Image (cartoon, rainbow, N blue to C red; front, side, top):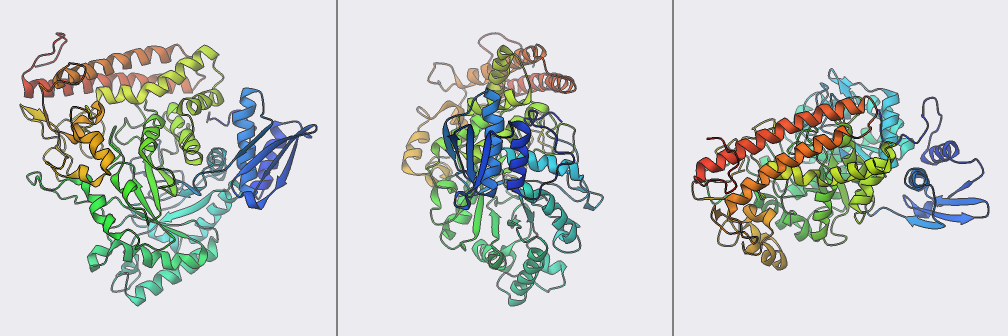
Length: 607
């Protein structure tokens, strides 16, 4: 596997039992023996401080801080050939987490990198060497929590807290020296499966059952980070079945974890997934706010509410969730998605950090306490399916450590660390990666609509795939107009935002083009600020996206990737080119048939 750890020697046969020991080992292999001194400083925790001394450098930090400092020194500094005289760094968030959606049968929900790294055949089945490699990858970019199983908990994953607990403990032992703590997804209704007559969070027997379960789990894995829960969402069980609130459900589990220092991460992805398309009063993006805003301040101290970054579901472009701006008395994590569920399945090139940086522009400092991302990992040789998709794992780690990280600099660092390309080629690849999100957006769903994908697998164009379905993901295109009015005069979604953002997006004349159809319903003859009609902008974007993809493929062919990366990158690039043409032709034809308005430039749109 060719990763950004290319500059480091193999860990095969290496012996270490703590982050501090690993830090010493990594530095001793990468640098002259007497050039570094490591000084433990528990007060620094995950942070580290580097300073120049006579004859070398001194690195201070807590146990994990020394490890993160060592990787920063080796990877991001020595790759450039120099070290600063003095530097200090500490993470913005204490919880920097990867959520894996792995099932114990070996499949991965929304997984595009092969089968599970952790499970097969209904049991834990992992390779120790690969787990150490994964731990090293995560530690090298400062990630410190790994939730290994799907939030949609299916049997026999329930057994991770019971019969499979010894294997979970052994896996935790592997990751511990890398400063990576395990977390597990749990089923809210588990007490029913264990023989109790109810899973009511206020029932004394249920509370006692979870306390006893937590005690057993922490006896086996004393540093378990905690539990992750998806409840009352997409037919998953939860407290609503008993007339209880999500705060009551979350607090019951948090109570069981509290004596052991564990956290309860409760996902806020809750909405009516049986919506009638005829119902114009229900607007799915409003759901999370409506469910959770009334509960602000009611959650226990060790509960973290995990909120998807946008109000829909990881679309190519959607605004920041209003819930992340509104709940000021609740600890919250922002959830991102590395797995390219709606962004090309790790076939189409899509670098995510430009999107993430846009989100942070509207997120006030210190509003969130943790950052989580849905995994793009699997058993494929390159671990992320597409070798270039690893840029998203790397840059997520950099962002989780410091959301002020420069996107272009982080992408260039990844390119430089992963391949020894000539400088001119490094420039080309960095540019291609940074522009890939916008290229993909151009040839897929236009101007903030989202969802024009094939149902179920979410790959490839289908402009009406979800239009009359139950999921509430409608664009309502007809012969005259397209989009949803989410202003106060429409569904009222925009009312969930602070006044400044209501003003920013509420007027279609001033709303940013790329969010235009998310917030507004407009006729095809609407004049954009650049003078083009809305329908012409849709046509132009899709043709441009296809042309940019053709240029992308030709540029990738000229880069000196080593084997086997080159073959895999180019084969997926050709698949992306096919995808881009399908998207361009189908979406343009769809809107041409509805509107009856031709392309002003006379390009081919199929009848």
